[in-house]
Image (cartoon, rainbow over all chains, first blue to last red):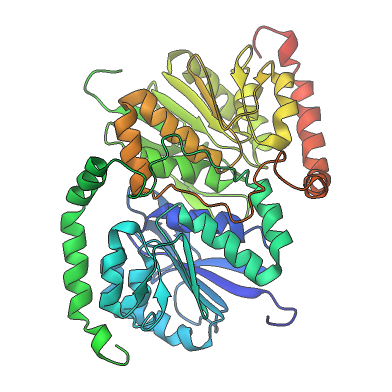
Length: 233
Length: 233
């Protein structure tokens, strides 16, 4: 804890992010008055997410103080973001002094591409779990995975579980309970098939097929970084 | 169904909206290629939500064609939005020709303020259920409530359940199942207290106390409309 000042919390935005990876945990953490929350991106201004929705990045990377909490969402844009040295440099510069370095969904691939999950247990979207070893991380199939000061969440909707877990970690269970209640987080998935272990195998196969191209690109890119064979990128 | 053209779907934005009421269902519906989805507001451009996050409204109300689906999120800003005749006029003009008129959270109070839930069963955030009769609606305590062509969702996170339900209604269960799986919607609320029926009574009481002022304002405003005593506003 950082005394009486607010904890500097930033959500990283980049083109092609999956907006719910970010907006889910934002909704939770914005309800914690002790957090100073801003969106941050390579350039301030509107950032277009995967399906077109534009969200405004309030800050760019210039003159960013040492942050306390960083949360990195995922999405098809993670690959391009990971190829931007400004994004990687921002994460690598902040990482040593940050209290919590976190991600949701394939945001963990971006953290991993920056060499920041090497030797950490971590999770990601179920479609990408097998990619985590390419960045030296130990994949764990769970909604929320904590290892030292890294907390990673699973795909999209897991960001809400992640943020409630982080809130409890920071300010205790009662605080997180109040937010869970206010957010009416008593979910009732209509079809009960929100994980490959629950869904019809043919549906899982169809989703895998549809995503084969993107997953292959991700694999190739992450493998090219050779992160699991070096100390840091 | 409207033949082969895409269904014109709009999410209404207004200052002070609760962004997850909108971003949750947006994430679901944006994955349905048959929907043409845009954000719409009184003025195009960034709209600031409850805790500061700005989301870009792509269209204003001018030259809006007859829409097929309208979704209205809620939030503390609903009260002011309902006092804007331009917003009410937009909803009232579109309502007779729209296929689905929908809301999440206290968005139903805005639909109700426009006189568009009179005689309909509907839901809203649990804190506001008792306000629905003021707009002539019949409150139903459920995550998703469908009555004729109105579908209303409960508070915040219920927007995801709502949108999956709407997807199944429009394009069949299999389509919605695929989205539920891709969104890894296998939620694990960390504390299991996301509804007043599940939470500690003292917590429920504390939340009610904190919101007493806003709820009283809402009650006074909605009562002043005298909607349940007239045919339409």
